[in-house]
Length: 361
Image (tube, rainbow, N blue to C red; front, top):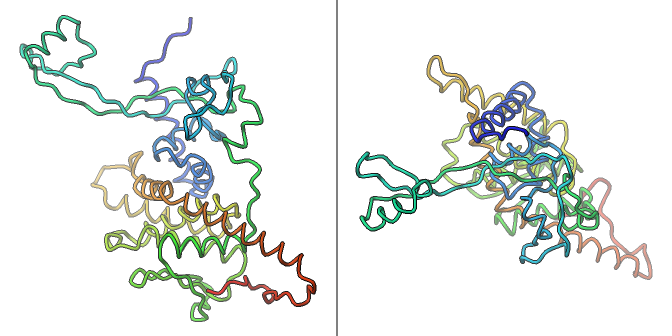
């Protein structure tokens, strides 16, 4: 019989896997783009759990405990998606994620030591209650088993409901329209084009004092949506006075990471230039963190966690609003297409000039 693995052994094993990922990022930070594409699928999880899932199964798509699969995977209303149990495939090994725990402990008046109530005998538990022993709750985390849907016998017809398959990605112009609407409705941030930013090095800028995004009027297609989403990242994360304390490297890194998450959600390709920009500022940020360490100290596993945590938490909160803007933009495009088909004289239908988005910023 295979020996059971203890929590301490699991922690050590998984710590090593996560450390390998972080070490790879520090050597080749372009790989962070792959992690962010992965994280966009697991926005309900914390940064630490997302990183832990990625370390164990980078192709994971949807995870749940075995008990959830057995009850047919309840949806957001608690109703099962399947009327039959979904079983784990034979030979599959569980993934592990962190789950918060709360332990009630009491202090033994004889030894003055804190003891978990669950470890007490029934007699001692009653004694502690009758004598009103001092008690407290201790919050912590424990590793719990979960499985990816690919490790189960889940019917293929349930995949669209779980993973969102079959939803056509918008084209670049539709994504731009959705992003502009999102900036206006969710962030109250105006987006304008200006010939004043006609520069090879400056394509866009976010002005926190006026809550305004200005884009170069020379931008087109994927360059335009990439820059716009990057500046939306600044508007999301760096609009309040507390952002002043952040270094330029950290702010640029966070805006790049946020842009990559939004690109994944919008179904647009990440440009090589955006990956390169992210990699450069990740290296700069790590140099800043290293410079702040005392002599003899080395970068810890969580040295780079602040930007990731800030970005993923904000993305978790705001991504439903961008999804709504994307749906609305698709509906507008569909209605426009239907109206164009119904026009008696197609030549009277106005079209934007070559290379223009047709948007009025």
